[in-house]
Length: 480
Image 1 (cartoon, rainbow, N blue to C red):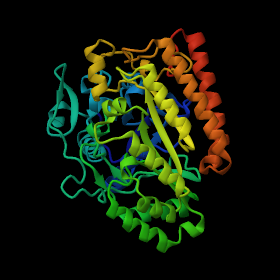
Image 2: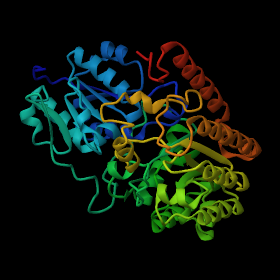
Image 3: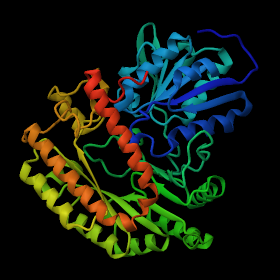
Image 4: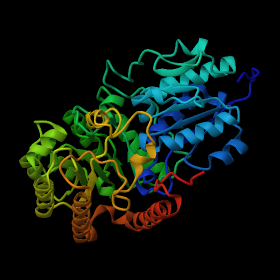
């Protein structure tokens, strides 16, 4: 759609395609989109007017009247992203889509989507906006020179060469601006990203494809953002959402010095992070405790060694997982563990080993998941070869609650009956609730408990309503 050249700011509507009824999807601010906003504002200033939203798309299209519509989506919500893109396209607005899903399956670019951003989007989106501002459109003749995109030309999808990831040669992310949170709900317990990428290649995780090289923000940039959150938004508790926060020990040691010199622990400031069990030692736990880390989350996945090896690789051992849990507990840090059941060859007896492991370990918080094939992962490729999934499937099928709609969930298990798997899942969920009830009085998440409980009630009510009245049981059904 050709537009006249104008000196007015280019209005950009940036949409995070989530379901507002699903607690896990709107627990924390979407920092990935915050980086896009801050990059546009830093580089283009008054030339752009950016709005970031998570719902109310039709109202914003009417009120804001954007020149560009940008939507980001994971696979579970790609049906919703397609609906949003169609609505914007019908209004004559060029559409840019980004996020995990289009990165993994660029062939899913629909006719309503003009451009798909592959991988990290800060510099790619900036280049696209500059092109649009210069030419008043997103023409294929201009797009051919933009790295890291997929677009339409003469009715065919064209994918350009990959864009180099931010800081590939230096392994530093410091060139990026701080994520813009002004249009986000920031609670006293908030989140930060201090690195991108992961050194591991777990069979169920797509992170290493989206972020193929591990890179870091420096301790100085990290402490600056921590102080910004404290002073601007009143944040007192930060969860670091890195795939592996303690991958770089020297960086953590430098951060430890800065945190202690700022006196953050004495101010009652608290932290949580994710780690591999292989990185937990007494020295590491001692340093985390001094910084007032109150919990560490680990992907423990299974209490059976064969299953754990198939999920994560030979470097991961049940014994090491046990030692990590006990070490954190001994140092007064709440150990959290996530577990996966339903791996293709896993038996009920092996699942029982996971149950027994959870039961005997001093875990404060446990998350139980049924293995779901996600695009780009080895699990996905295996499931696709078996005809369980496809690149043009209904993506809402990845979003069904196994607890509430177990008969329709996509399962990869070849050894356990669907009903038996559901019964084991409920058994583990009951154990999860029991362990959390024991730990809740002194748990750092106690400050979030009321909000969490309310959100889960709303989510379950919505899922049940969708299942009973929509005839489909998908959580995105009925949002528009």
